[in-house]
Amino acid sequence: MVEAGPVARIRDFRKDAGYTLSRYFWHGGMRTTMGNLMMPTMQARNLGGGSVWNSAICLRIPEFTLERWEREHGLYGFTNGGLDRHFQAVEDFMGVKPVDDDVQGPRNELFRLAAEELGWNAEPIARNEAGCRGSGECFTGCPHGAKLSMDRRGLPEVLARGNDIYTSVQCEELLMSGKKVRGMEGWVVDPRTGERSHRVRIEARCTILAAGTIHTPNILQKSGVREPGIGNNLRFHPGTMVMGLFKDDVLPWAGATQGYHVMDFIQDGIKLESLWATPSLMAFRFPGFGSHLQELLGDYTHMASWDAWISGEDSVGSVKASPLGRPGVRYQIHDKDVARVAEAMAKLSEMFFAAGAESVMLGMHDMPAVTSDRGIIDQLRSRKFTVDQFPLASNHAFGATPMGADPTRHGVDPYGAVYGVDHCYVTDTGLLPNTPSANPMMPAMGLSHYIAENVLARYT
Ligand SMILES: Cc1cc2nc3c(=O)[nH]c(=O)nc-3n(C[C@H](O)[C@H](O)[C@H](O)COP(=O)(O)OP(=O)(O)OC[C@H]3O[C@@H](n4cnc5c(N)ncnc54)[C@H](O)[C@@H]3O)c2cc1C
Ligand code: SF4
Image (cartoon, rainbow, N blue to C red; front, top):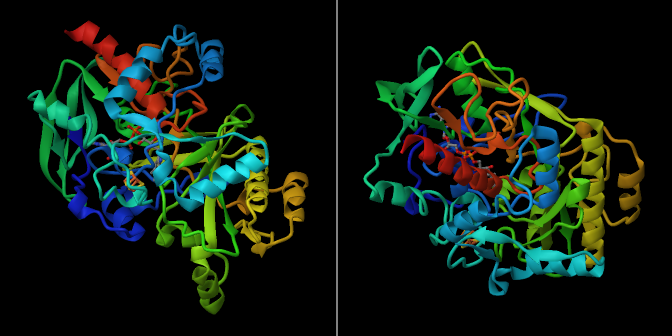
């Protein structure tokens, strides 16, 4: 196995977003989409990928989505529990369980109370962890070793079975012989400077690409694989956030990074979550400068932050290898998804007022920066907004090598094999042909477990 980035160990973690992004994320965490919005989209670059920095949320793909994938993408055999044993195997192995009550903390508890007040169902989130202390530091790396990210659960077992993992090795191209993939070629890359030193060539009977939905199509395109389903169906869950200001202390950093969510609106394409990240990341959404900004930051102890992501099911983008070899990412957000974002922000504002917040902070253009006027909820529901009015970002990227039965639309077949070549598979979020109606890590892991069985059956 090769990984372009370095190993990030507990002793390397610092509660500082700038430090984390610059060392362990592609393009220093500054990657954005081009299109009708420059939307930030971060991707990790280290052993274990995004699982080291994410909130460990692990959700299965719901039945209504699997039925849709069967109808629209020819993915048969997944409905009626067809994927259950794959999800179960991954969940058991990764230690997936709901957040314990005693590490929820006040920010998450307020979210639950708000949902109850409105008659919505707040569920404790299922995560891959053992011994979470509710320190809210998932984004800068779990200092307690509680999060069971791939570097702690999965890759140690790979090594224990006598396999090799090479970090700081970047795959550039596949080794091709006609349509047959024979392995990969790349470089040893210095994790700090990005400088290349030694050339690397690995020959293999079967090559599995798991470089994430941006880099996997990029590698295929640079290798001359130009099937129509490669790189043309990039999808995101555009995400937004609202902050609520309370009279009393909330101490928002206390408690699990993401403790509760509301799934009631998932079929409308909206998911609501409680969230925390370091102030150095969150504060970029604060309005104003100088003393005004300082004053708001002084209120941090009274704030809670809740986020929402939307399905993005009407928006689509692409990944195309640029002449320099870098992936160019385009994405066009459709008006229907803009309306979903506005509704999601209305729902979060409703929750804050229901929980007793004195005011909310939307971070939107052409809307009040901080407001205690509940009329804002109606405004969000009735006004027509343009996409650039919203503070959107998305770390849920998927779909650029979609799985499906049609080689003119899909990048990989229903068994995970790349169309147009032989002996090459994909096992990352690129597989998901449209929104999995769940945070994307577990959907990709469940499908990867299924694909792994196909690969084992063919090669062993
Ligand atoms: C801050 C944050 C919070 C998130 N929270 C959640 C959450 O709680 N739950 C959830 O489901 N999802 C969450 N996500 C999203 C989730 O982490 C990603 O969807 C998931 O990690 C994607 O997995 P992947 O295997 O497709 O790609 P990645 O995790 O990105 O792994 C791909 C790996 O391949 C490496 N690579 C890329 N190109 C090359 C190359 N050319 N040669 C060698 N190696 C290469 C990369 O460096 C990377 O390590 C979050 C993401 C972020 C950034
Ligand atoms: S909330 Fe804190 S202790 Fe729990 S998994 Fe995240 S970083 Fe680790």
